[in-house]
Image 1: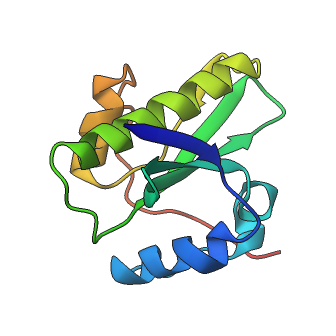
Image 2: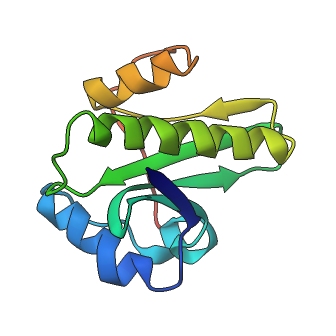
Length: 135
């Protein structure tokens, strides 16, 4: 039913930026994302892109699974939820295969938090501010 593929060089400009706009969010710069916006995966339902996410590798045993974004116009139920779950599960397994002992995510969206919990993530502290400084 679904196919999971690594992000390509063109996915950011051709697909992901529009998805962030559709949800009313500013797209992060390519340089803010892992491997210049190719360090992640996209889930497809046949030829329709459904959702995507990224893996940040660190100099510790922690990998960061985040920037989950979806096609707002893809409304097949329950396929949409299944695709997002498949994406997060795939990203998490890849972290483990690459030697990470912990997977981390910084999420505000309640439904997405519930998916992470379903997949074995434990909710840590609630946070109130993301702090970023451009260097």
